[in-house]
Amino acid sequence: MAKKGLFITFEGIDGCGKTTQLENVRKLLEENGIECVTTREPGALKLGSQIREILLHYDGVVADNCEIFLFLADRSQHVETFIKPMLTEGKVVLCDRHTDSTIAYQGYGRGGDVQKLTELNKIATNGLVPDLTLLFDVSVETGHERAGKDLDRLELAGKEFFERTRQGYLTLSRQYPERIKVINAEKSKESVYNDVKSLIMEIAGL
Ligand code: TYD
Image 1 (cartoon, rainbow, N blue to C red):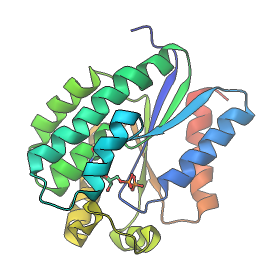
Image 2 (cartoon, protein in one colour; image 1 turned 30 degrees about the horizontal axis):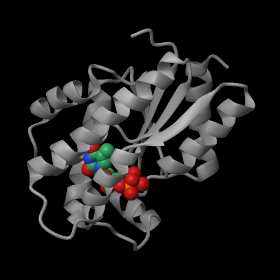
Image 3 (cartoon, rainbow, N blue to C red; image 1 turned 90 degrees about the vertical axis):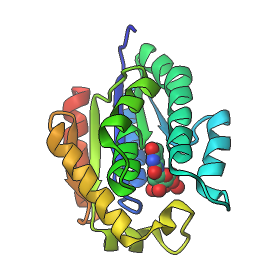
Image 4 (tube, rainbow, N blue to C red; image 1 turned 135 degrees about the horizontal axis):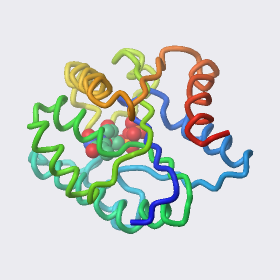
C-alpha cells in the first residue's frame, strides 16, 4: 500500500478524556493546514454502526468470542473501506480506539488470550499499525466519575475489570514504547492538551 498519511489512535479506559483531546488535535492540525479525518471504533461506518448497536446495547448474553469477532469485524471493514483509503490520500487519520482496545479490554480485562488476540488483530487490520498511539492514563475512579452515570453494557463490567484493562494498556505501552505514548490524564484538560500537542507537533513535523 502506498501509505502517505499518518495514522494516530487514541486509547484509554472509559472516561479517560481521549475524545475531547482527539477533537483538540483535529483543530490543531486544521489550523496548520493539515488535512485530517476523525473516526472511531466500534461503529464508524454504516455496517459498523449496526455492529456497535449490538455491542453496546444488546440486552442478552453475548459470548466472549462473539464479542471479539464483532469488534474485529467492525475493524476489518473500517480499515479496508475507510482508514487505508484516507491514508493513501495523504490524510491524517485520528481514530478513537483501535487494536489496543481489543488487547486491553478483551485480553487483559476479560482474560482472553493476548497472543491470539494480537494475531486476530493482524488479520483484521491486514497488518496496518498506527504511527502513534496516545494512551490517556487515568485511575478507574477518575474514569468512572468522568464517564458519568450513563453506563452501557460494557461499562457495567465492574471496577476490577477496568483495573485489569488499565494495567493491560500500561503493559502494552511498555511493550511498544516507540508507538504508544502514555499521557497522564489525571491532570487538567489544558495540561493534558499541552502534552498531547507536543507529541502531535513532533510527529506531524509542525
Ligand atoms: P464508547 O461509547 O465508544 O466508549 P468510549 O467513549 O469510552 O470510547 O464504547 C466503546 C466501548 O467498547 C468501550 O467500553 C471500549 C469497548 N471496546 C472494546 O471492549 N474492545 C474494542 O476492541 C473496542 C474498539 C472497544
